[in-house]
Image (cartoon, rainbow, N blue to C red; front, side, top):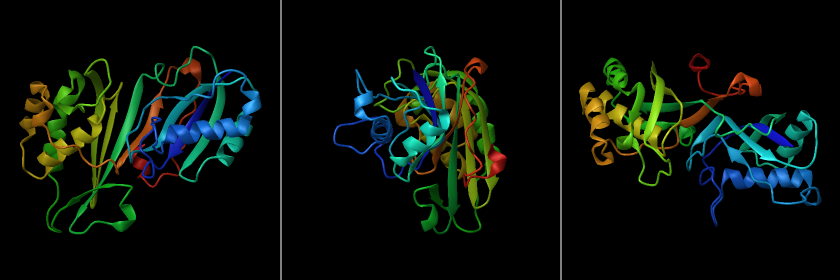
Length: 274
């Protein structure tokens, strides 16, 4: 049977989601935990392999990650939650579990993904937010020009070729993606970027945030964002920004699959963002 899980994790101890040789990854921890719960004797063919909605990078967090896997044992939904969590480290948790039809794919059935980037700014960094938020040093009397940043975001809405914001290691078949909305919320000393789209390229959100920061501190104009987008040239956009403040918060699926909403109440991010 096919099981879907809703996950939350602190990505700071891990080398990203995807399994890699000699690296500590979230996928490895989840697959080991599932295998330990069901028992190796219950796996009659191939090892447990988990498919994810979004392969988050090193240091990136998730509040609403969705995965699925196939297994030849049956348990009720709460047994999956309790059982798998028993074998997971404290930095990863299963929030919900449910059986799904075999035509469900955590990756390919998703039609919308939402990321939030949390940025802290001021004269001194916060040690309490070191792995939880990005940081920009600003004098106490200065702040970002949020209105100009919002103006710059307009050109990004819709379907575009986002090559300028694409990592050289990106494995996506196409650089063309659709951004549905961008919200920039100022709550000094915090700044939040909420970006919703059909899919994202490797490092795309972090590259967008880095470019927004250049505009917000006055190093670039609002029009510069549209110039960067049109150039389809990664070298002219801002450097890739820190992974620490990036959160995968929600994945949307067709109603027919009845995928639960993520548990966001336990997040330190402002509830108004959700």
